[in-house]
Structures are given as C-alpha cells and as structure tokens.
Length: 457
Image (cartoon, rainbow, N blue to C red):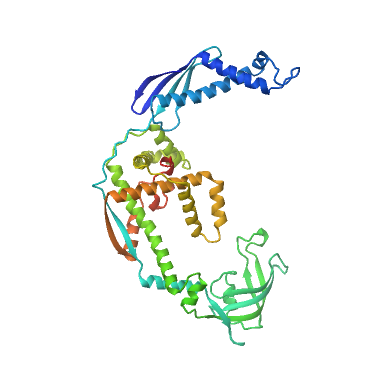
C-alpha cells in the first residue's frame, strides 16, 4: 500500500492510496479458497468444486466483497500512518479499480483541530448554597397531610358537605339503556375534588347515609367508547356511608406512614428534596458561567462536516423556510456546541478522566430511587437502549470534567434563600430571542454539551 498526501487545506486532508494488484489478487485467492470449502454445486462434492468454476460463478461478488474489505482496512491504516485525528466519516473516491488492476482511491478526511488549552486560573464563577426556610417545609408537610387524609364515620343523620367522603353504589343508564361501566360498588368520593364526573360532587352535597339519590351527569368527551362520548346519563346512587376528614396530627406516627423514621427525618427528606430541585437549576447556571468563559477564551478552527451534521440534527424537524430564516443563528449554536464539546473532551483526556461501568450502574440506581414503583421500566429502558447508557456515560463524563474545572477556578460560594434562588433562576430562564420555538429546550439545558462529543471513554 502506498499513501501520499494529495492536498491539505485547513482541517481537510486528501490522501491518495494505491493498493497493488498482487495484494488484491492474493486476497481474492484466499476468499475463493474459503468458498471452495463451503460451496456445494450440482455435479461436485462439497469441497471439490474447482477454483475456476467458483470464480466463474461468484467472481464478481467476491471481487466486490474483497475490495470493500480492502477499502476499510487500508483507509484505517492510511489514517493511522499519517496520524490524523478524524472528525466524522471520511469520504472515499474510487479512481481506478477492476480485476487485474491496481486499486487507486482518494480519501477525503476532515480532521479535529489542534487544541491548546489555556489555564483556568483566572476563571471565576458563583456556586450557590441554598437554605430552605422552615415555612416552606411546614407548607409541604401540610400539603402531604392533605394528600393523605384519613376519614371517620359521621353521625347517622349528618348530611354530606364539601370535603366529606361519600361511599355509594350506583347504577346508570344512557337513553334508558345500561352500558359498559354503568354499575359501581363501594365507590369512595371526596366531595369537592370533582374526580368522578363534572358536576357529580355538588349533586351529592346534602345526602345522608341510606339515601337513594338520583342525579344527572354527562360522560366525558374522551370516553373510550366513542358512542358514549358526551352522552347524558342518569345515575341512581345508594348512599352507604358519609365520612368526614380527621385532622392529621403531623407527628412521628404520621411521618412513619410516609416511610420516614420520625418527624425530624421527614422534615430532612423534604428539605433535601426541595433543595435538590433548586440546586439542579442553580448548578446549571454555574455551569453555563464556566462554559461561557471557556468558549470566549479559546479560538478553534472547526471541521465543516461536524458543523453540518450538528445543524442537520438541530433542524431535522423544521420546515425549509424555518431553516433558511434562522440559518445564521443555527450555525452559531452548532459551532458553540461543537467547540465546547471538543474543548471539554480535550481537558478530560489530558486529565485522564474516565467513567467506569460501575459509575453508570450507580447513576441508573440513583434514577431508580427517584421513581418508586417504576424500577423495572427504568432498568428495561437502559437494557434495551444501549445508546441511552452511552449517553448517560457521556453526561457523567461531562460532569466529572466540570467538577474538576471548578476545583481549578476561583469559585465564590454564595448562600441564598429560596426567594433569591427563584429570582436568579427566573432571570436565567428569560427567553432567548435568537432561538426559534422549535430549538428551545428547557433553558437550564441549553448549554449542555452534546454527550456524543465527549463520550469516548
């Protein structure tokens, strides 16, 4: 194999590769001999078919197979020989080929730029620590209490009012006829929540135990049976019991019903949950502050093919008119993403950062803990989608890089309360007028570096 640099302009290199006909013929003979052992043709025993017969039958397809394999192998070797860091998929342009001829082709390669990382010593950012006020924790406790009401029987002749729980059997008809789901037993309905049918609750206000109540209702527009959608119905309800809400005492016993050790433990869990929600947003703001400085302080010549690929991915769901309208801004966003991806990846490589399979599994377990009851769904998702695991690995790798950078810069720790946090987040989330609606994602994720650019580890 002979490899020469045909031309080099910027990040694009064109290599001329020649593979001599003798090498090709040897590969052809090897493949034909392999087929000789496998092929069974009429009139010949398996393994006894003459090479000439096999060649006449399969020669063209074998040549194509051999050339394809040679192109893959030699293009990889040519790139390694010239020590080119490839960006994207190289293009092959066949010049001369055919049986009995040398294979001559050009390899067009876009390479990654040389990256000279600057010191982060002069960078600075703010990292926020948030204090969740007792008032907010107590409000959350009351909310939990309301969502976990306990009910007790009312006196025999006491009437139902909003907030009470009515227990009843029902039988319904539409146009005088029964229908699927027209009967129910022991239905428990908390009046005022309107969870059954619109207007149903208010018609039960004033009923007593053992009453028979007839009322009218309309079935929902999204009823699974189309013929019943928006159908007016008549209900006959036999009232089995009326219950009133007991005042939940917010104490250790209440905390235990929610899985906490005691009330203090429940308060701590609530504080951590609310704090984590704020910190997720605040940490993204700190991260953007760092990324903006990294991007501003480095100049890179970016491979055009990577820019084109990024734009294509960003705009795949846009109409041509929208693509053209926002062409300049789309290119700006694509360049920013690629530039940051390359810079962070270089920093990760220079500091030998890696992500182990154990770290990926630990992160999946962390996600599972936040989704009780859906453990199997989460596990199945990652097991059936290798790309999801790879993307998660890239995100972990990126966070490792950001954490390391934080340790190198001047990081001001700022203590704030929830009101201050909401103001900071609100300011950060103000719409970016340069982006189209279809390009907008959650504001806190808009500067997240594409994981595929930094998930090589």
